[in-house]
Image (cartoon, rainbow, N blue to C red; front, side):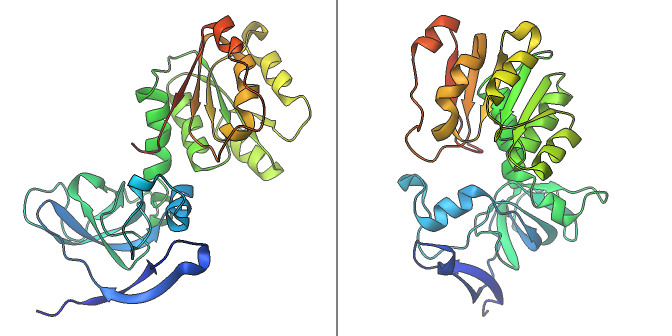
Length: 274
């Protein structure tokens, strides 16, 4: 039978936002172990822009043309063959998509489709996947953060930063978060973290002074390593770790490896949701 059509954002060449076009395309059909979702909200993440621009890791770039988007929320439209934890009509949120969520419908693996409580809106749920999975991996997979440790979220007002504050606080950590605007600082405070402006002169000294006994922090979740990594290292206490979550190129500030030696600290990287 003829495929049903839908509207979707299509990227036929890598480039700026102007390469995204709304097109009529064939609605995907779920295969074995897959679910067709009617999308009510799609999450937009930095990684989507890197893929659209063609600047992401070459081996992870999608083939052209493609529809962007891994995060989203909606209702189950149809099921492929095989077992599934959801049923047609269920409200769900997505932690991945095979066909792209910037569309009226998308197909996801069953393992990426999760029940959505009625108390959470589609709009809010559309931002869960990448942000919370990245924050979780950063805190509990790449390292094993411990209760009572001090965590600095360096750039805490974005999606991953907010998720990291919530997860670390729920785990019993003390959290300090930075932001660059009054709105961002208010958001960081609202999550239960101590908010400090990273636009303020000497803010790193202020962070160290606020740490227990002025010894520094146990963990730094770094969202802009190209700017901050060199400044992060002296802030670590003995045995501390910087987790690099975001970076846009070579570091702008010098890195002194001796800072790692003196505190026997570490730097680890996280590639988003893995």
